[in-house]
Image 1 (cartoon, rainbow, N blue to C red):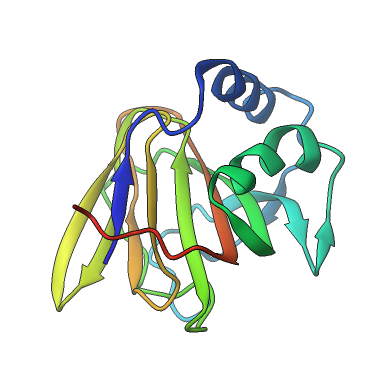
Image 2: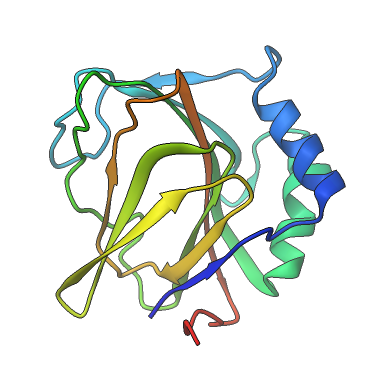
Length: 173
């Protein structure tokens, strides 16, 4: 079960969010491994939390993220984190992983960059490839294994990961 939605948020909110994330004002934090159980990329990545540990982690949560969570009919936010990956020479991939292993949690990814990077979901023992397209949103149960195929065509790839409890609205019809 998963759902892909193009042009997920309205143009003004998307532009504001994208411009803010891509500005020099975000306090990015370096993470040396892409997943906790295996790292195939030597680059690492940068992350920035809007929401973590049961509370907003930054003043930008309310104006930029809360409208998106409301659109998702969320009940409880677990974590909202922006990720910044730099181009890799080869199309390396992360290991399959779960953001949160809980049956009531939903994971979603908002893409802020057009590039050849991909998210691969493991659905019914098949790989489903989701291209990185600006303002594309993919939503799936948090217990769905997924991985990243690193991009090779643009310098930076930005995404925002959402993990929340709310309406289970991800059947791809």
